[in-house]
Image 1 (spheres, helix red, strand yellow):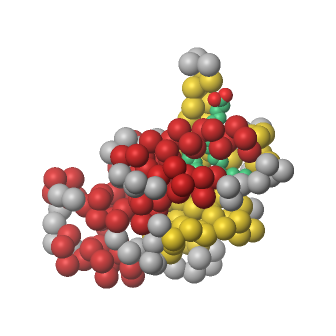
Image 2 (tube, helix red, strand yellow):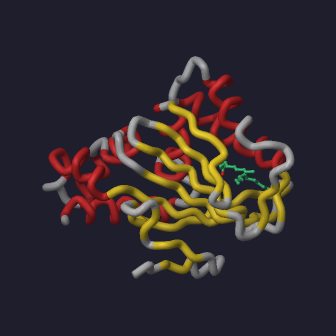
Image 3 (cartoon, rainbow, N blue to C red):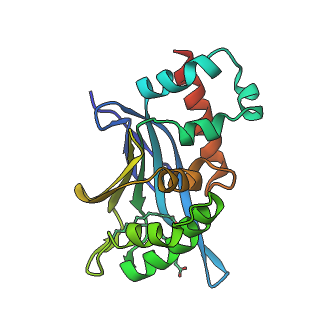
Length: 204
Ligand code: DAO
Ligand code: DAO
């Protein structure tokens, strides 16, 4: 049966399983300060991973550790850099976002990460990513955007069920995941929840 989890803060629903085999690990919020004042919720996100890929990549190294031991190791990094099918599903909780505006926002967030991971072609990568989003698109409350990393480090973007493009880049995949489960995630509690869920998947 198709189960879903409700995010109690926004009322948005996240299916427990997407793309046949990717399990929901945790839900968080992306907030942003407007004019340095009010913090608005832009979207809720759910992070998903393929359990078999996870076990295949990480069981040997981490399967026998405790959850607190994971934090001392390279666990988060190995999850983000592994060849593991993962999806971040974004569900917009803001009335209406113009694409130009959205583009500027992620040039800031993703651009910073691309810089951090040292892609010498980061400007070109960012341009490639943002050029997938045409000016006439509009996202508003209820829009669903899947940023899906497939094996081989291919980032596929799907907006309201329609594929808008795919880009093969390990650095871009890493930069996207870093926003949600990296060192300075949008939602710290979500990152903790996701780590616990990853851990329990490796115990099964
Ligand atoms: O700063 O005035 C403002 C409004 C904040 C909007 C931030 C947009 C964040 C970009 C992510 C959109 C993803 C679809
Ligand atoms: O929250 O800063 C962030 C990063 C969000 C990246 C998501 C980009 C997807 C934008 C899709 C727009 C479709 C018109």
